[in-house]
Length: 304
Ligand code: ADP
Image 1 (tube, rainbow, N blue to C red):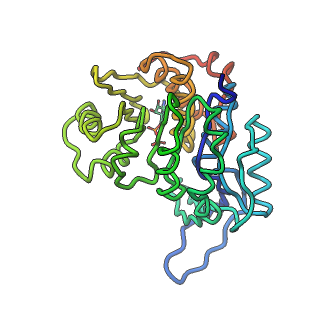
Image 2 (cartoon, rainbow, N blue to C red):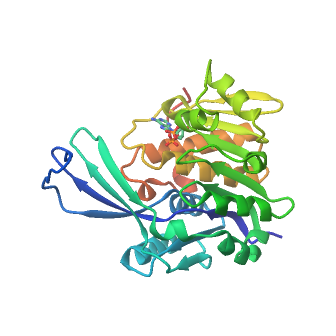
């Protein structure tokens, strides 16, 4: 009945990365390494992660009519994502200018570019795509009004998954649609309005009280926890040697959204997502670090 297991509505950015000895201060110029350009953006990352696992995946996004836009389209297609919903033009492709120092600390400036031009009207025009998708996932690197429109046009029976990153307070109608709302600690704090007390279980319950049907809190190397009206369940992380955590949350979210859509129980789906996140942290980079289903199955190491 559905053509797509997952439709991702979100951002696509080119990450422009330069290694530096020291990140520049105000008015300062420093020389750095050769420029590396990587496909990124939370929407594009989630779509690649899902498709690489074998999910039938489509992306609704906007890129510029430029080289960075073509780089992003190429990486989506190489992973097997249907890019018919990727709109081209209106502004330059979004970019993240990233400087990284030898300790791994970075400074990042994001120009949303075309991501800021993905409008509610674009969502309305993509109605057929929404109607063909079992699960729709979104993040907040596109205008909030666009995410609101997604929620309003969600067909009956289609699941909505939101990773509110970068975080901001959310309107009730968006919160009420989330199944689940997926947050890390920082995002949880902002969504909760700055107040977070007690254990992660307490945070999850506080977020659940804001209206989502379910909440997932990701805890990095500590795993995750999932909260529904029935209670909270801890999902242990898989013990791995972490090399680079970039994109782990995107891979986790994509895997969880896909598995929930397939009808798996929340705890089972989240355990699978934790394995996907664990593989992703064992490799450098974002999209290049995302595993295939075979690589997830082959992951050694016990649960924590
Ligand atoms: P975000 O990148 O959004 O902050 P997290 O860092 O919490 O998200 O990572 C998402 C998920 O990826 C975690 O819930 C966990 O399952 C997995 N993960 C992240 N870091 C590690 C790690 N060091 N070891 C094992 N699993 C990890």
